[in-house]
Length: 303
Image (cartoon, rainbow, N blue to C red; front, top):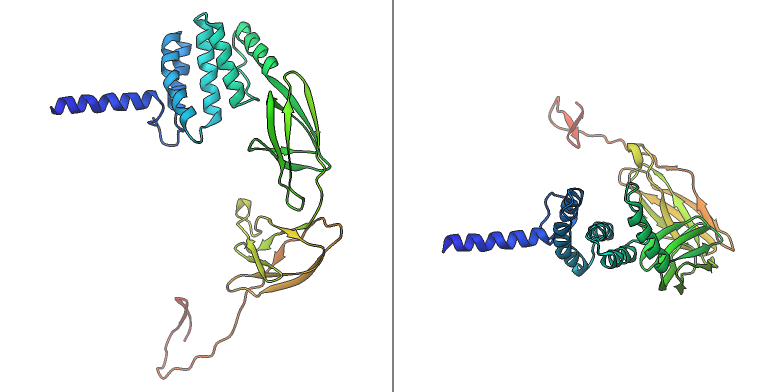
C-alpha cells in the first residue's frame, strides 16, 4: 500500500512538472522550466516530444490569472517550429497567430529557417497593424493595460480589432478612447493632453524626509542612486494655480519651509536639492556623584 501511494505521488509530481506548475529553480516563473526543456528537445529534433510537453504547459499558463506573456510567447514560438518541422504548417501558423496575440512585438531568432520566417511574416501581415501616436509632449500611455513611454511620436504594432487607449499623465486630464486596428494598415491617433494642474519635483538632503504641501503629507523621499546624499526626486502632482507652502520634516533635523507658486496655465517645476540642517542643542547636567560619565543615546559625552 505504501509503494502504491508513493507511485501515485510521483505521477502527480511528474504531471505538475510537465504542466509547468512546479518550478525547477527558485525565481523561475510557471512554465519557464518546461519551455527551456522544450527548446533543448527542439534542438535535438525531438519534435513530437516538444509538442507533447508544451501542450500541457501552455494550457496551464493560459489558465493562469496573470501569465508571463514573454514565456507564453516563447512557448508558442517553439511549438510552432515543432509543428512546422512535422509538416503541419496549418498548426504552426495557428501557434504563430497565438504568439502575436500574446506579444505583438515578438521577434524570431535570427538563425531560423527562411521558410519558418516566411510563414511567421505572412501570419503577421494578416494579423497586425500599426498605431501611429502623436502627442504634444512626451508621456506615458496604456494600451489594453500595457504601458508605453511615448516621446511625442510612436509607432506601436497591435493585432487587428478594438483596443483601449488611455493617457494617465500627472498634471493632465485623463484621456481614453477605443481605437480599431486594421491588419497591414496604419491607424493615426492624435492625443490632446489637456493641462489641468501643475507638478513639483522635490529632492532632499538627506533622504527619508517627509514632504508636505499646504500641510498635507505628499510622500517621503527615498534614497538616491549610488548611495549619495541626495534623495531620488519625489513628484508632487495635482497642484492648482496659485500660492503654495512647502514644508520638509525629518527627525533630528530643522524643519524647512518655503513658498512657491504655480502659474496659470500650470506647468512642471523642478526644485534644486533642498538640504536640511541638523537640529542640535546644549544640555547642562548636574549630579551628586563625582566623576560621573554622561551618556547620550549610548555614547559617552563627558564627565
